Each structure stands twice: as structure tokens, then as C-alpha cells.
Image 1 (cartoon, rainbow, N blue to C red):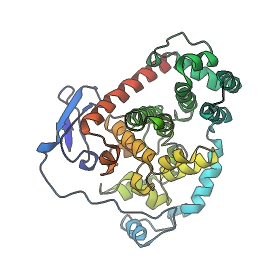
Image 2: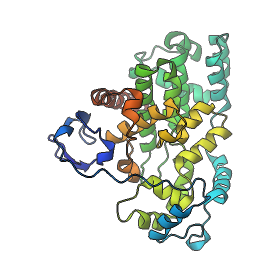
Image 3: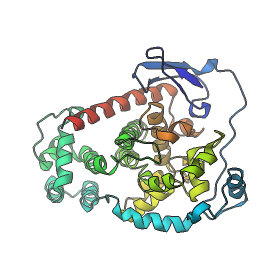
Length: 367
């Protein structure tokens, strides 16, 4: 569907698969943030979109994968120039991923302390104060206008006492992400900070959705949303190296970037992110949600995967860090029913995440 903002007159396309089947939806313009309302009931009826083809997992290959690759001019397992794919490429990527800023031990230890009902604020402060870089960023965000404590938080222990351990856990994961997700990513067409802003939007969206539907999952939802696209960090140079293959595969506009990843690399960024999560000892429920954030129906019933999936789509619709692949992803047709969400609730979540990301980003830039 082509959408034109009545305020700034910018036009952009939203695939029908990304929109609810009925009713209406409102969301901020990605350019000027003016609210756009779409009456989806007035859409002309048409044939439903073709379902996405199931690609091979981890480069093992099947007849359909071979057919897809062949139509794009890409051999199933032997790429031009001898570029590897599948398991061979995964091993190379995970080896190279050692250069990626790891999930710090202080962050992992802090997560365990926060989950321990017998732990104290002093225990958490002692761990956090061992990593001054993380602690400094935590205090900077704790004093942001978004959390309403501008200039009033002086130490990690003070922050945990005033804001509470659950909010402090958000800040700890965000403190790591501000550096790890800030890079320019030429393969995905993302400028510096784009991935961080998008990830922040998905984190807040996931937390808001979970808080409304499954409050006990809110903190895990925030963490999963924040690192859901971490696989892009390590895949970006490999995608850039294969730019011609991706361009050819996507030329007719019928395939998604996700299906291109699977056909050309043998896996997608969600799968490689799950591998990283395992290496970082991220809890299994978060790793599962991250692995299946584009295909929650394949997650064996992970509600967290559905939550992150919906938040991801909402963040993309609001124009946050879309990159070259952003507007091509389709919303799972069962997600609204699975989560009990209405289009009106989606619109409210969109407004809330835009406001949250703008507030955090502004305070971080001024700091």
C-alpha cells in the first residue's frame, strides 16, 4: 500500500502483509512524525500475498532451496569466487565474532544477581563498579529525562535503590548496546546509530507489549528486543562481500532480504544471533525469541518470540533503522490473535516507542 503523509507529503510503501487484515491503524510519519491514519477497511480486495518459501536451515539444502537459488543465478552451494556458505561460513563468522564487543561478564553477573531473590543492592553495586565503562553509561542513562531522574542519581547503588532492580537491568543492557550497536553497516544500508535506534525501539516496544499482556516477561522482552538484531553486526561484512549476489536475488522485488540471507549464506541473521547468544550464555528463552523473531510460528510456542516479532514490525513501520531490508518483512498473520492485540493498541505502542527512543537518544547525544 502506498502511503502519503498529508503534513510533509513524503510517500512510502508498506507491504499489505505488514498491515492488519481489517479495521484501521494510526502511526507517526517516519519523516516528520505527524500522525497518519489508514482506514484499512476501504482497501480494494485482492489476491492474498504468496506465502514465503521455507528455505534450507543452516545450509543443508533441499530441492526448493536449489530452485530458488537457481532462479536467482546463484549455485546452491558453490558461489562465485569460492565464497563459503552454510556450516563452513558459520564457523568463520563465529571465529571472527570474537572481535565483536562481547556481552560483558559484569552484565551477565548483574543479570543473575537481579534474578536472585536473596541478592542485595550492595551485591549488584559491587559487580557493576568493577566495569567503569558500563557503570558510567548506566549512570548517564539513569539520569536521562526519560527516567525522570535528571542529575539525581550519583552511584549504581543509588540507582538501584531509586529506580529498582528491574529498571537497572534495562539500563545495564542498554549501556552495553550503545557501543556494540552503534557501527555503520554498509551491507545492510544502515548509518551509524541506525541499528541502535531500531533495537532500542524494539526493546521498548517488546517491554510495553509484554507489560500489557504478560507483565512477568517485561524485562526479558526488553533484553531480547534490544539484542534481537545482533546477528547483523557479524553478517554485515559478508553481505557486503556478496552484494552482487544479493542485488541479483532481490532484483524482481518478490523476495525478502531474509530469504536472500538464507539462500545465499545458508542461514539468516536470527540464526547467527542465537549462536552468539549461546556463546554469551544468554538465557535460552531469550535466545529462542531472537532466533525466531521473524518467524515466531516456528518457535514451538515461544510467546516472547511473538512479542519481539510484533515490536520489530512496529519499529520498522515507524521508520526506525529500516535499512535496505526494513520494509520487506511481513507480519506473521497470527501474531495479533496470539497476543490479543488490536490495531488501536499497536498504534499506541508505536507512539510510545517513538517518544522513548527520541528521549533516550537526545539525552545520550547531549551527554
